Structure formats: structure tokens, C-alpha cells
Length: 249
Image 1 (tube, rainbow, N blue to C red):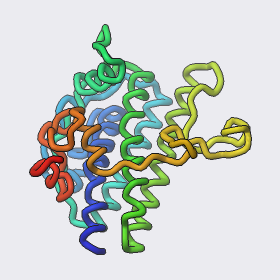
Image 2: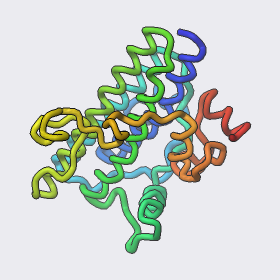
Image 3: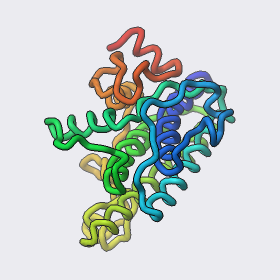
Image 4: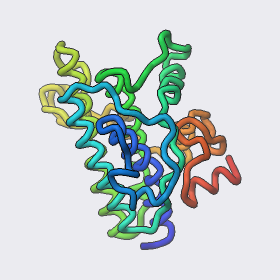
């Protein structure tokens, strides 16, 4: 695998660690240190991660999500060396800050991602979408068939995450389809003719692609790829992320 491909495949490990820990802790009350310590590789435990107050149905689905993300970690780390788990901030305060920024003012009471099914699903929706658009952005830049096949498989599962969470929110809302994923039945697609339903889409309904630089600006919560914070108190890992921290724009 060319060095450029290794760098692009390595970068998503930052997001896969985040997703794995969030889903495992939320549903089971523990993370990689207990479930798959070899993948954590002695990296620091996440800050503020806790079990969420989930119903049996939602808890079961989130557990499945967690297991899938562990599979993603294994797949990537089997293909490249990668890096140990990095420091993550999964505290209630971290998610509350994201929601405050989304609304443009502090919410009262503060948003608590772990308080109930709805809040947890809302928090869950933040993470896979960033990963999804990152995989879309990386795919055309890859050179080797091995790397392309790896990223294509990961992209497919990230798409499924958005669909599953959307269906759960519709079921809980009990008022029909008011939230859709990336693939829907033709009757609820655009013009009632297509199954594609890309929520994060451009004017041609194509999935937006995000570069590593754009992803870092989002997950750091700073709007800057060289100013760490947010979910990554000490910054992301890997050659690409480290290069931005050193040099910035």
C-alpha cells in the first residue's frame, strides 16, 4: 500500500476510536479496555464516558453499533500499523458544547447525551456523519485497490448507521417519516422516484466529501485544524493530523 494511502487509511482511526468508545460505554458501561484491550494498545482512557439511560431496544442497537465499530478498528489495524487509542473527551459537557454551538446559545438545562434514548441518538448522529463524509472524501484519493476496497467497506457500514438511527428516531416520534437516512424506499425519495436520500448532500444530492482538515475543524470544535479541543483534548493522531497541528493553515 503506498505511503499516501497508509496516511489516508490511518486518519479515520481517530474517528473509529471515538465511535467505538462512545457506543460501547453508552450501551455497556465499559469500553475497549475491557472489550478489546489489544485495540486500545495502552492508550489513555476516555474522559467522562458513561453508560446511558437507554431502553432495551435502543441499548441493543447501540451495542451492535459498538461491536461494528470495534470491527472497523480491527480491519484498519490489520491493514496498517496505526496508533494506540488517543485521549478522547466523551463527557456530557463535551456534547453539550456541540449542541450549544449548533443552537447558537447555551441550552437550559444543558444537553445531556447520556440522559435518555432521544438525547443519545441525537449525540450519536453527530459522529457517524463526520466519519461518513470523511470516507467519501478519502475514497477518490486512494491509489491501491486494497485501500479502496477497505474504505468502500467502511463507507457502506457508516451509511447504514445513518439509516438505522433515522428509523429509530421516526419510531420514537410516532408521526411518520420526518427523518431519513441515506437510502430510502423510492416513494419517500426525491420526486418519489429514487432510493438515494443523502442528507448531507449537494445540489445534485451527492454526499459531501470532507477533507481531513475539514474534519479536524469540526471534531476539535474550534473551526481550526491546528487548534485542538472538543472531542480531542490533545489533538488527533497520525501523520496527517500531526502535520496540521505543527503547521496550521
